[in-house]
Figure (cartoon, rainbow, N blue to C red):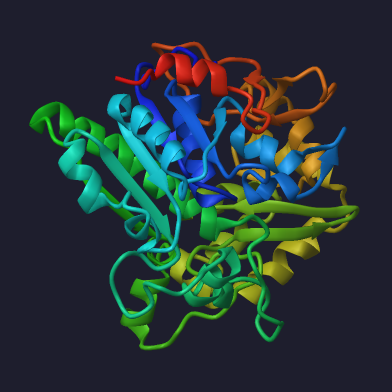
Length: 384
């Protein structure tokens, strides 16, 4: 089930469920690690019950757990804990996303395992981390988005609180956990010792706030939602054309001068309101009116051709169907089939990391059925 990659030979014991942890271990599996998913007997990962369902299988589960193996273990049963220790004797990494203290109560926390397995990298992802006054609180993605400030930046000023459309609270924590694991494995090559990695969803949201934190400290005011535009770059948002919207992004003054010339209005770049980025950001609504007056007589496709030929960063606003069908996305193997005969025609997201030393596969392995790999796992991790 494992594939050739930079993490080939690395064994991950995956005790995670739902999204943050499974997304982390999905990335590690795509990079070549052997990921053994330990699931609750009879029920499995909670996400096996999440839609959409395709031929009785959870598409949600499949998307985050493809390329892994599954074994069902009851971590409260002595004989099953003994099997887990068989895995840990040969494992490089354990990943869990229980609430802090849960693994300690099972006798499987970091303090217990580091003595027995000194080379083990132990990665814990949780809502609020292992320290601080909120450590024992439960959390889901929307909780992290709400508390981490990103919901206050999303949507339109005066509108209702808006969650980001994908689960960045979970996904951000998963990305940081994967980065922490790879860093810890590199450190182990130097020191010979494992370590504890503690990643919180709330911390991860703060880490992803881009320039919002520095803007707050620079101005003393919390940034407001800016709709689809950028808070400090203009033009940098969707603009109306005759049959829809086109996104135009000019990250410097030279690009704006080129845009103005391309639109047949070089005078816009001489207007004191628009001559420099800081001025354009201060007069962003006037700039939008000026650009849309030029854009509205023609279709989006016309402007994509004109601006694209001039090297102006621009784009249509794709829905998911159009994004999946985009020739660039397809050429980069970012929408690929899954090797599961029960899911004919189903495609999933590929791996964004492309490496010269390893081929970028044009398909992905199936997600495991619950406990489907028990026999092979027990054979590969025998009792001593």
